[in-house]
Length: 535
Ligand SMILES: Cc1cc2nc3c(=O)[nH]c(=O)nc-3n(C[C@H](O)[C@H](O)[C@H](O)COP(=O)(O)OP(=O)(O)OC[C@H]3O[C@@H](n4cnc5c(N)ncnc54)[C@H](O)[C@@H]3O)c2cc1C
Image (tube, rainbow, N blue to C red):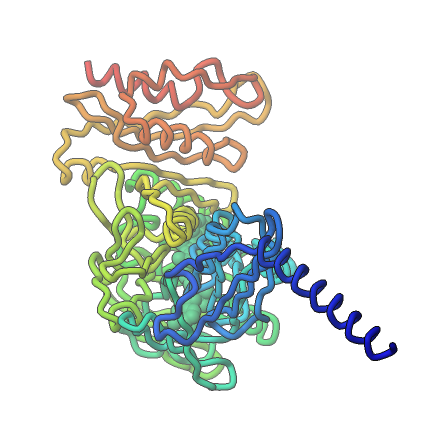
């Protein structure tokens, strides 16, 4: 009797199991796995499987390409499945371009695996802010971070800090990296974004490696200068190079109480603007006690007791406690070139307007690439933070399937030197002439706001337009710090972007209140003066 009971119970259980299994298998649908995203280049690095559940939900199991994070177990709605791209996007460089690329890729494709390899420990720091840290205006260097490491990782990006990409093997979609312990490893990518930026030009002069001689590009450079300022309390500085970094540092070091000399090879400082504006900068520097020597080629720096001696021609010699060499930047493109990627202008990586290099699945952005000039309709090398952010964003978008194009640069830039602001956008007279235009450049002096309201100051504007078509080609401007110079040059930049004629600037509906402007903004006053000269 008991045996019969056991037998019946076994039959009921078996029937129950069969019934349960058939219910499960009825709910289960076979789910095709996407091909490209989840298959490694060598066929082994990625495993994935979908464990379908009933209804609209799937459990997806992914073993990431590069073994940095845990395997992913994701619960997704079935219709989200195609968006689970699981692209392995590797970004070389974690500054303006690299982080912008990673953010955009993650924004558009929450399933992509973004790994950012950064040669130092300072991802997403504003190196544009270094002069203001060294001046003491920004006291804590941590404040220079656009985003903290925590914020970057919270956005879904994996950071490999103190790691350098040594080589790229485009054929097998691998990069070879060396970490801070000198250990080598390799990473697989579906898409690679090169955002290696630029480095300071090291001019051919003797003594560049002496103690007390500095370049300024990376956080480490700034720490070295800072350390020297704090520990050695230098009293004098020579800045070699009168470009915008030289100007900002002349301001910074003067603020710290050093006697500063700027030595420039050209006839005036700040060659990005015409001499008439450059000479106003020289005058402002002199007013602040900065010595400016133009037309001097520095040849050597030597140690002379406790000082450094800077020698150049014609017959130039000066002693200083600190020397800063700021003679420009060059693209960091060796890694790309060695991987067979084409370079162009000044050795910068050649990219399409979609930020694609000539090698498939490899994009590049920022100071390491050529930049498309919107007016000249050709590539040039114009490294700026604004451009790096835009190009990075485009590279990130296109790396996960987008098709966005870079709209081009106009070379819009601004610099603050003591209480002067100097800005430019578009082409100067000579540049326009070389590009085949028939330019007319007119300089206008007007007021930043209504003169009856206290604190009005002069603004100088050099406006360049085409004589034949009336088209706006460029503008340069100089004024005091509260004269809205930056935003006024942006009006010109917006007008240039939309190919406005000079005359059309007068049609713009610009804001006005006496403490800030005039019914005709200085931008429009300069346009009117230009038109009268054309007549
Ligand atoms: C003092 C100073 C002031 C500036 N002021 C302004 C300003 O006011 N306005 C403006 O528009 N621009 C300014 N700039 C320029 C601006 O900072 C740059 O245009 C911008 O930083 C470029 O960003 P990027 O990401 O292309 O390159 P970078 O900022 O140069 O970053 C390159 C990144 O790549 C990493 N890297 C390089 N090689 C490797 C490798 N092999 N492996 C791993 N990682 C690597 C580096 O560690 C870094 O993270 C200034 C620059 C300086 C130095």
